[in-house]
Image (cartoon, rainbow, N blue to C red; front, side, top):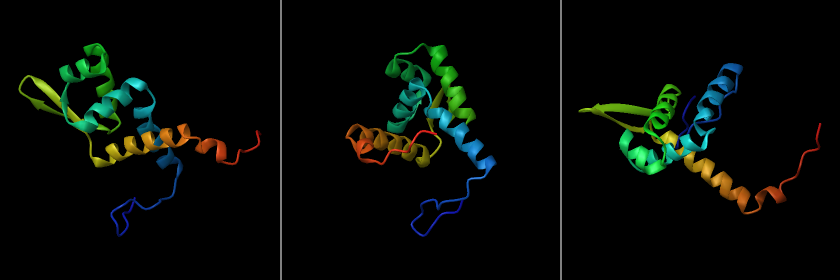
Length: 121
């Protein structure tokens, strides 16, 4: 994907390979628990124990979700002493979360009712 003059990604062709990679990345937003973890990491890096307290999940569940998020390239972990501190992979992930929030707010405020509806197939 190329970047335009303003630094934003330009629209690229969506090939079957690209579509598959996008679908894989979107799995990070497909479960509320992962969204909560990503939202915490959007604020600042966290150790697993901090995420457990922040999202109210068991340590094993948080670790499982972090492993998935790491495997799909949304978070990175850095060993610090006896713990691992996780952060978002980069600013693009924060933008992805922000755009998802914006879209939900857009729908909540009634934009969906103003949009033309497609006929069912």
